[in-house]
Image (cartoon, rainbow, N blue to C red):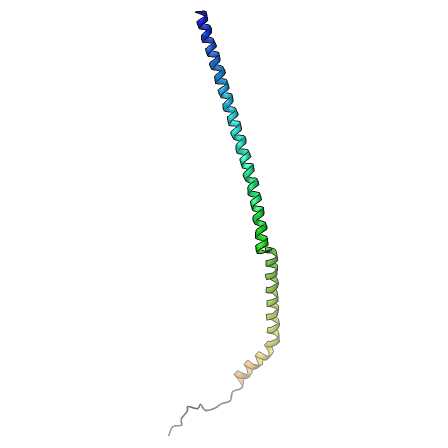
Length: 118
């Protein structure tokens, strides 16, 4: 009977050791999965940064600098405004004279289609 109970005890101890090893393996597996996930996230972030850098480089080479374009447009706009203002000041006096002469200098004439009553 003692050998039988001793055998049962050995089986129970072996079962406990197997259960402990199984739990330890599960913990190691969980740690490894977590570590693999962190490594994958880091690799994805690195890849994303690399691709964004390449995109910015290509965008700059194709489209040029955005700040440069806006400065150029602003310069063209101010130049156009300056030209219009100077043209207005140059031509204002002569246009006013033409308008006033057209309105005020009336020369009465008989219309060519007018027929006097007989």
